[in-house]
Length: 412
Length: 143
Image (cartoon, rainbow over all chains, first blue to last red; front, side, top):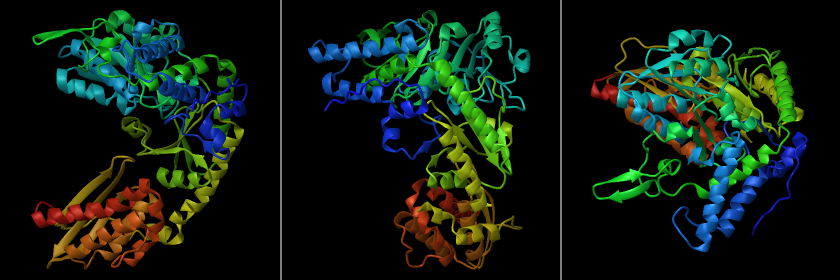
């Protein structure tokens, strides 16, 4: 069976909710765990089903009709990602299994061009996905890892940038938006400083892409990594965008079929990017689904959606702050932030809180959010996080606040 | 359904915090982390005459973890290593099946509703896992 939904125009959260099959089937659910995984939009689900039922075949290998259809769908998915990232070249789009794989690819392939003593700058605010691969590179290559601290308000402390940049800085690898605090990184001074130092800039965009298309050229960065499942697409697929001239200088990470020009028993030569970085059979249907999700997103009225997300974030913060013992972690202001709000509740463990909220159909996340250095900097072991997406509305925020008040009565 | 996780028996156990603290002259000690949530349990025990003479724990964790540690602190002193291992195995069966098995410490029966939430099993088991590890170290003389 092929499911093809009518295009849904998203003018309100209820419209958006209708565009998400899971939410349409569970109208009572207040899903506020979008920073972990967003829901799959109908456009992506339809594309997945259509692909698997009409043109499932391997790509870049076959010449029969199905294989050519699969090639075309995969090529179009790459083009959709390129459009979403501001109209970059499709040859600069590398499909991976997710943002973590993208950042590991970068750490291996770009890392192979670094020498002992070369410096990579990260921040305390990073997800483990943008820390551990660099720890591993430090073990392999003897690089020096420098770390930007965060301010008391939970933002990357750019005032410390001059001291953090050593003489052999080669790469600044930072989050575009914190998965814990929602703080959006102020990129202009970072990019300017990196360029002046001859260093590259890589962004972990996992949390940013859910909130609209990203023009990577306008940001001035060199690499951008994200996951499909955090921008209304399927899981199992992600993207590493890299500037062509930088990708061309990088050796492959994984070896196998599809990433070579020529193989003899004496050795092999590499295909040009992006194929050089896509060894083996890629996540084809997932990429097709991601392309459909991004095309769907690209058509949405983002100015209005972002304004609504900002209003809801303010409503959430205003609802949380008066609750006894609740402390918001990270910025409380409205500037340069995504609709992600984490908080600590004195005397109540996040896992207990999440459990009780779940009983009220409110889905949030408790834990360290794979950001333990940031947790330490914020003075907590774990916290509770609510993260909004375009389908959330006032009822979701109010349900959280009401359930939280109930949980505090129950657990204290 | 899961409201019952936070029934009074669990809350009372956690608040009682039997055995919370540290132990002088421990012969076995272990510290375990739950990598998913960052919770940490440290258990110290002293073996005398083949039995657990004393047990203490420090818990940085959720209410379920603190309640399980309190049950341990209440019941482990006076037990043999084999009895503690049997109690831990009975707790594991309770979490797996939701049915209290024979030999389960009565305080642990309150954890039956956690059966429906596999993501929380590790919270309950962490103090017992730490205690078993501490027993092992005591036996090896590496406490």
